[in-house]
Amino acid sequence: MSTPHSFTGGCHCGAVRYECTSRPLMMLNCHCRDCQQMSGGAYTPVVYVPAKAFRITKGTLRKYATPSDAGGENLRGFCGECGSHLTGAESERGLGIAASSLDDPSWFKPKMDLWTCDAQPWDLLDPQLQKFEKHFPN
Image (cartoon, rainbow, N blue to C red):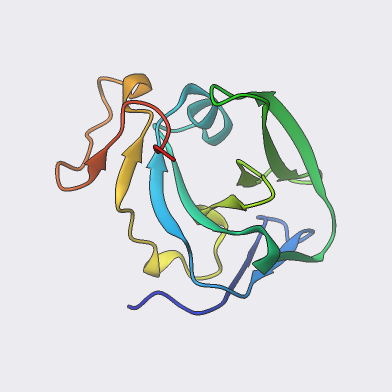
């Protein structure tokens, strides 16, 4: 399946819905400890999009901030009802969307692994993906 020009998604309970009117800027797997703890898994699969192309169409995201290694804070969005993790790494440029929240996640194709320094020994990284020890170089 090819990458769509626009897409939709939301939380598990349906209280929060979103749409994005742009193709992703990049798709990746983030293995940082914050993503591990937020997702409950080895990493968070991320669809990174332009901030101006993303909008909430139903409900309200609750926000949670953690310190960012790149400076400032990493702002994450989740549903206040069911707790589904929906967004992260929000900035004026863009934001990451958890691929698990897509209505059709079948088109998600990561191109890189970030924060491999935090990857767990039981996390079998795809050898075909580009690797970055920490965040993506600007």
